[in-house]
Length: 303
Ligand SMILES: Cc1cc2nc3c(=O)[nH]c(=O)nc-3n(C[C@H](O)[C@H](O)[C@H](O)COP(=O)(O)OP(=O)(O)OC[C@H]3O[C@@H](n4cnc5c(N)ncnc54)[C@H](O)[C@@H]3O)c2cc1C
Image (cartoon, rainbow, N blue to C red):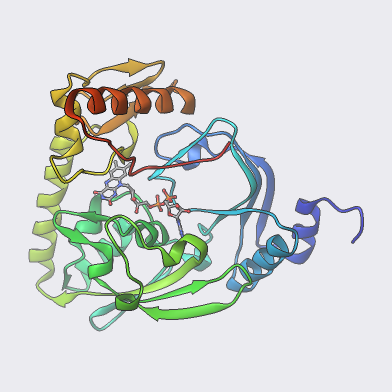
């Protein structure tokens, strides 16, 4: 209707179970805990509503950003203009075990996927246990740990384009690479089929527990976005940061973890600007001392 604001028009087009908010704070929706607000925030309660919202955004040239669990994001203090879509509604969070396969919604938490695989006696998904994201974020980032990567255990991905059309592709055809799946830059993952190999639940549990111990002894407990930099070919980024004497270095409320040089942690008072200034300082020092250009693994978005 004429004269409606975008949030009003979106509310009118989506079902009541879908949430539309304005100026939604995002800091608590990220693990690092810094971020400005989303101009418009939508939590659709069905694929129909997601498609409707995307078509509206395309028709009105509103930029769309998909938020997972915010564990690989640094959102600038000015927030995100346009529409932020979150698939945290329970509609998108299902996990169904069928034989050796797990059909997982994009909003399902990776820890829950690993637990479901363990309970079903399926091996191969243990590495997902300590990655604090959801399936959509893990697919987009091709998240990996303990020598394994998401796309090695994925069979098919269903996704939606910006016109609300749904497609399904075999994982092998999606050309996923180190920490990226280019197909999902523009498209929104809806669900994926993951595959495990039959094993004893106790053996799977033991491997998960060993992975958990390795993580807790090597990663800081504070708020962070995980590894800040991609590992260059020469050496792990954390080691380079350590060799440059940067552990413990801080800007405002952000500091380089004393435990792991590739983690930037928030003492509870950091701003996104503090974190970005510290990232630049680290990159400059590593470039100067080691001649290596560190690239961020964490995505820096927003205004
Ligand atoms: C303590 C800690 C430990 C970590 N350990 C690891 C690790 O071992 N290995 C590793 O790889 N990463 C690790 N990470 C980083 C992070 O958890 C992963 O990259 C994770 O996959 C991100 O998922 P997310 O749901 O939080 O995505 P977000 O951070 O919310 O988003 C990341 C990207 O995915 C996109 N996205 C999200 N959902 C969708 C969707 N449905 N469709 C399309 N795109 C989507 C977003 O737009 C964004 O571009 C760690 C982070 C923390 C804080």
